[in-house]
Image 1: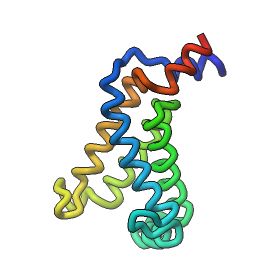
Image 2: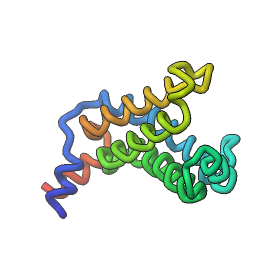
Image 3: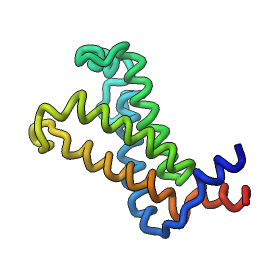
Image 4: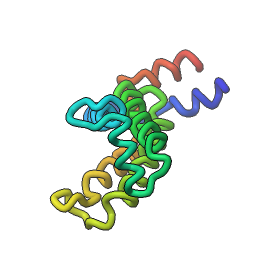
Length: 147
């Protein structure tokens, strides 16, 4: 287990990933908070769950809980640089589901509720999954303690 955590937390990336982690983490946390808590104009678990059920993602409440948790806690982990790779993989999967279940049929552009924004978040998540957290991250502390 120690070797797995060390492998997941080790990163040779520099500070450039910090410039990606901070805004992406905040964006994901805000979207997750909309789904989970109804903050920032969101509908909370009940409202989001009902909407998810209506578009065929059933059971809606569970899907809202999973998506909201992945976004809120995954965003928090990315912001902190804590287990960045697993968090980024969970978020990449969440964005794939969002793109293909909600936005893809509307085309690329956000003005038509398209997948443009989801695609940008997917790309950022994949980048972080490949690079790891980089410098100024909790992962660096974990990697040093486990070395």
